[in-house]
Image 1: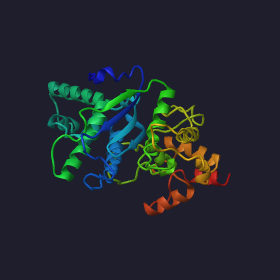
Image 2: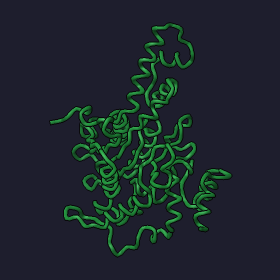
Image 3: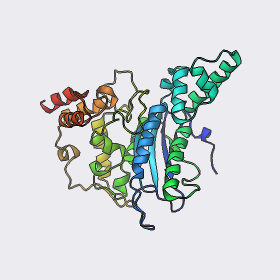
Amino acid sequence: MTQARSTQVSLQDTAYYHCISRCVRRAFLCGEDKYSGQNFEHRRVWLVERMRLLSQVFAIDVCAYAIMSNHYHLVLHVNTADAEFWTDEEVAQRWATLYKAPLLVSRWLGGELTSKAEINKTLELIDEWRERLQDISWFMRNLNEHVAREANKEEGCTGRFWEGRFKSQALLDEKALLSCMAYVDLNPVRADMAQSLEESEFTSIYERIHSVACQQDKGQGEVASLPAKGLAGFVGNERKAQPCFGIEFSLLDYLALVEELGRVMRPNKRGYIHSSKNTLLERLEMNAEEWLRLSESFGGKFRCAVGSAQELESYALHTNRSWVSGKSLMEVACHS
């Protein structure tokens, strides 16, 4: 029997949740549909771009994701502490990024309201929006509706694209969080779609390994008025003393954990990482010191892009920048 979402999400117990959305019947989310012969690989980009936009607008962080052929996984963190510090004006502006604001709110933002009743009604609406911007259901609803509209438009049809509701699992402790993140990141390997972590495209671990840009100036889906935001960072032992949110584990240890789990053969899964392969650090020709410095980057030291010194220099050139934050850190790592 279907349970109410309120009985599955309890922020008093945990702020971390594993969410899954699956397409209905033969609907194909991404990849090549062998039944129809059509290729929908580009839809993966739709999801990633929308997910990034929503994580920027909502008080919700993306810890892990994997986009498969007919479903996707997200590990989300509800950051209520952030939402509490938003001003009423900021809440209204965030909501207006996704939905058309009522005329009453637009007039309030413009300082045109003088009636106490109208002002109180506006503030009631904003309080409701503040709650919604911390709500996983609203996050998933917006993500799925956007993709469904684009997919139906592309296929020239109407009707339901996703199963009625997304599934959610509460992750109540660090073991559950890390195990779930590893499970999500290993999805392409287990489905035999990739032979290694660095080949597992459209997953969070692929992004972390390849140090993909957290966001690009003037890129699609970016909101210039809101703080830049990428994947939830690993703070581990390197930055425990800092107050900002982060996953209490080191990135290097997490990568080693996921690779070790990926080498285990499971009888009910087709794929695994072959034991004959070198370690991830050996394959990427990196040393532990460079990885440790890189692990600190996913919390703020690298602002617009994350990567090696050479990659940051190239990124600066391609984006017409004279300098990219973090370049000096990686130069130190390379020469240590």
